[in-house]
Image (cartoon, rainbow, N blue to C red):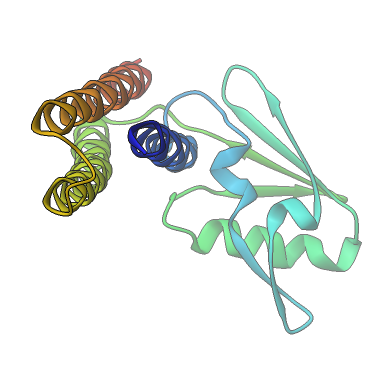
Length: 184
């Protein structure tokens, strides 16, 4: 029973960290990243599709993203969707190709992005705290039902907290890395 609770924390914690990584990959830095544009939604013949389903996306360092669109008719639609996104990027069309040059981030924009990254990170930490509280309630109800001794209850809660600390440490490392990326 105790191992199930610890395993639950590990799985849920990994899921929260993975979600945070996905969220970070879509946040613009000075480095080009395909994840920046791949989920931008395009109205393609009445269907809303992400850019990644309409072409291949590549990166040309130091600051260029190149998108090869498979259907010539979709090129202006994708370019329009990119320019209308919250990323404030301009798309340059050349045949079936769209090139996006990432300009250097202003200091003000960097500060906005850092503030946003910290906010998103805190939301994920709150998910982790809710997870811990839920597992601790489960442990308490097992104790109340007489399925756990007091020592087992405290050991289990201690094990849960150790796992939560590991997840929070991983989240802090990710946050530090993302902030360094933004500041480059």
